[in-house]
Amino acid sequence: MSSLIGLYSLFFGFSFSFLIVLNSVKNFRDTKNFDNRIIFLTFLQFFFVIVSFLGLIASFISSDFSNETVFNHSHTTKPLFYKISGTWGNHEGSLLLWLFVLTFFLLLFLLRSKNQPKRYRILTLLFQQIIIIGFFIFIIKTSNPFNYIFPVPSEGLGLNPILQDPALAIHPPILYLGYVGSSIIFSSTLSATALNYISKEWAIHIKQWVLVSWIFLTLGILLGSIWAYYELGWGGFWFWDPVENVSLMPWLALTTLFHCILVLEKRLILTSWVIILSISTFTLSMCGTFLVRSGILNSVHTFANDPERGLFILIFLFCLIFLSLFIFFFFHKIKRNDSDSFFWLSKESSILINNWFMMYFLSVVLIGTVYPIFLDVLSSKKISVGPPFYNKLIIPFLIPFLLAMAIGPKLKWIKSNLKNKFNLILLLVISLLISILITNNLDDGFLINTILITSSFYLFFITLRDLISRKFKNLSQNIAHFGFSLLILSILFNNIFSTEIITNLKIGESFQSKNFKINFEKVERKDKQNFKSIIGKFNIENSNGTIDQLNPELRIYNQPNIVTSEADIKTNIFTDKFITMNLVQNQEYFNIRYQIKPLMIWIWISVLLISFGGLISLFKKKYEN
Image (cartoon, rainbow, N blue to C red; front, side, top):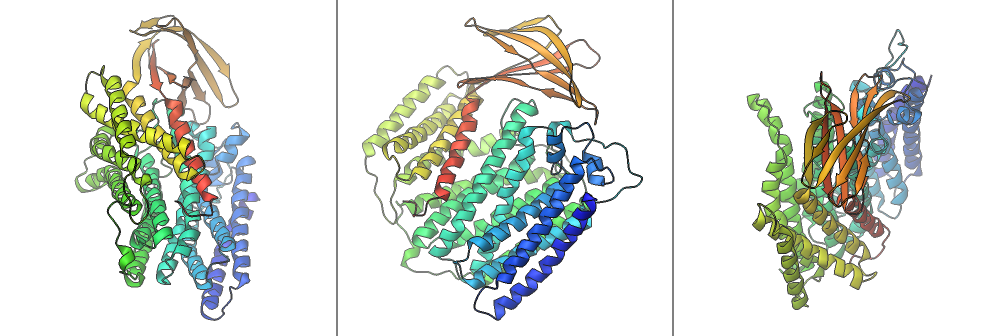
């Protein structure tokens, strides 16, 4: 019954799209005041979409295996929490979640933009409805979450066990809020461009949507990174996996867009940058949807392997890109006056330099992600692009980027000069001395690591000084920049000073290294609701005399019948001690992977600080200084 209600609600929501479009076109032409019936129709569309989504959730909760989506991704023994999260832990359900967020954001936009010009609101609504109609057609035609199967199976196939995790349960909704938020930015920018409404007032208005999208995308990436760290057993926070890159690219574009909005808000320049970045952010979000759901990418994150679905998204994406480029080239009027030029040493200049660096990083990630795809299509050669590619191309440019980021915020609008040069030079010298002391004992990479750590410490010291000395002035900027400097330092030390041991041990055996001894004491077996657990008991004897007890786990799930490895992690403010075990096939040995990861917790804290800085800025009403 719930599936039937969900299906009919989906079609009702689709039909309201055309009513909204018809009323919007009529209101755009005829009356001076905004027709409130449009808001009511938009609310009804959102209502039917949410009823459809709740219908799918109810089908998962009740284990309604007459629904094909529920049959493919659920099981009666699965815990209730994962039955609910399984609603969006698949291709069809995730697209319905996309549609839910699209309609919710549109309704929110109409309610929050009452002070904006009528024609601008209506045109934004029409552009957004184009996207919504496209997703309605996509879901109904290729990805219907309410397909009926007969005869009705008695059991389902179950949810992929690695997706049965609290962090990953909330990761997709938060990430989608970031992705779909970019659709409002896209529609709003096209509308403002077509109506020649790119102005300071518009910048103040759209900055809120940029920040909301950016904050959710940042938190979504963080949750995905934490999940990959402890669930996949890789022992790291980022692996340049193609689907990780797909979320990073719109984040880079959004970050650049936000800084451009600040300039536009203050001086009404960089309008072309703002338009192009708004289009690029949404395009990259849609490209991510295409790559993940077309089966092109081979990743643990991918949902589907259906060329028909990928082809539909690709055609739809090209139509949106063509529409946006047409509006940009034919409606965007570039005003050339004295305010368009700015002094080389100014905040505007520093933001422009920031833009070029960010676009370079974005280009590297884009090439590293799509190049293997094109190579496979053209020559049938399969390659993977890993960390060495990104390290070689990003690290040399990261150094001047960090130095520019340290100095840029100190500059003034229009024209500036560097005051307190002695303090800037002193902090640079201190940073250099500290980095030499740190890297002095490294076997290789002394020069590049010294320069990289110097620039990182330099940014850290300057942002820390600004955070302390300026108190509440520019608080959002200071917190976000300090968080970013802490992130870079934590990543550097984590990469340089991590330790890893991989060995095979029987129960009762030990492994001795220079700084610690791994003792494999025993294993215990436990039965849980939908899996059996084999828990290893390990004592790690450290060189300082302390002993750590770690208990990694193997889980044998009943449906689907899959074995997963669960890491045990001992965390403090300095290091993470991380251990996983896997059974070596047809042998009595267990493969043991033990890692010491410095400053892992500070990577998570720093990203939270960056997000918190954005949250403070969201509630600020005054210009950034």
